[in-house]
Image (cartoon, rainbow, N blue to C red):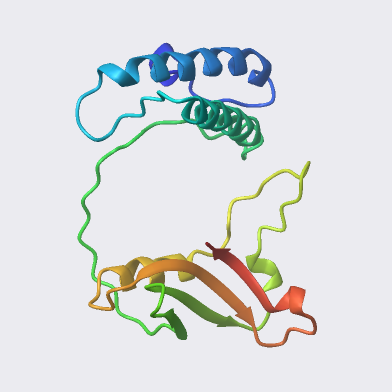
Length: 173
């Protein structure tokens, strides 16, 4: 809804003005929930549920503050934008580890060094756009196969690593 009001980006320059607007928007959405139909509503009726909604609101505001630190120059152009793309991809995934009990898999792509594949983002650092998405593409391709598992991550394994910190980089849930 902020985008509908012409807000294209939340950044360090407008974050303090956006937080109260965002909090008001969250409050409005929470008030609208009981009137929504179907299974996609959140109607907090008990004290515990209202506490969870308040916690969710705090988490969303915290996330908004973190998003204000995202790389400059980008603006929101789509939200919940439907896409349909047919792509043919051929290749070989270096390694796929599966946790059959939990129904998940992890793509592992071998690299001489994994340090250049990690965001390395620490609080206060300026975020950087990932330079390598090969593992993510592999993960998406595997989701469209008969593997029958959910993706839990895409990792780069530095086979020249000298320490555990240098061994893996990427995203894992």
